[in-house]
Image 1 (cartoon, helix red, strand yellow):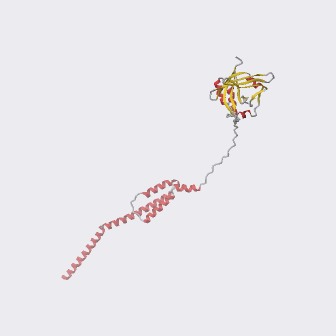
Image 2 (cartoon, one colour):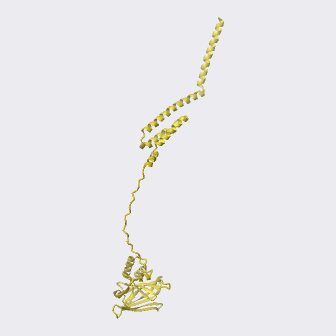
Image 3 (tube, one colour):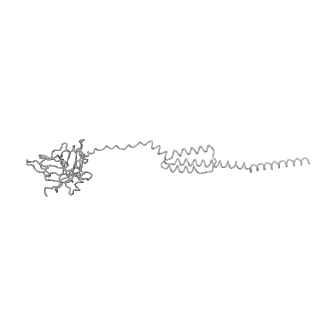
Length: 311
């Protein structure tokens, strides 16, 4: 009997020890740091899987309901959801899934849609305008003997012969100076008849050089000759009080004048006088030229002569 009680006591003790040890071991494992951390990771992973599944569903819903015109808005919403910091530790497979979602969103972006549409569009060709024929503008060329065109030259001559003061006459003489006397004389008819009557009289005055200095003096005398339609007269040029040249004439024509022009070109030896009668006054005026040894002509100066035979 005593042996039985001993054995029973031992068994009870063993059972109690076994139960106590098991409970202690289980509680130690449950309360350990590694166990808690592993359990937390499993819970986070499960929660991440669920949230990832929800995000994929939202992406798919947005893609299914998106209109190309609202692609900008859809793309913004997707990027907002995608870039939210969830604090998740996702697996490699989950990362691949998200990258796939990115690629799908890029395909729906407005720039991609516009690029694909732009490739299909045909360029619109601008209509080619046929130039209409414009009437040719008639430009009056300058005569070879002047820098002015023909119309301007004639207008300036009219202004000159209607000048009033000596200063105005000299200014206008400068505008009608000739650059090529030979071109002026080429083909020009001789001055005859009534065109010479306006020069009748005796005219005297000085010749001013182009620099304003006193170059000499000039006397021109013209009158009717005994023979009908003829004129007679002489042209004298003085320098330093002495006669340097004297040209007398009796002729039916005196000088040359191109058609439509008012200037009368008088040749006196190696000198040329571009002569104008000033209307409304007893004056004649003109430019004074000399022919150089090389055959060209040069402007020396100008003159304004007053009529003296009426005094």
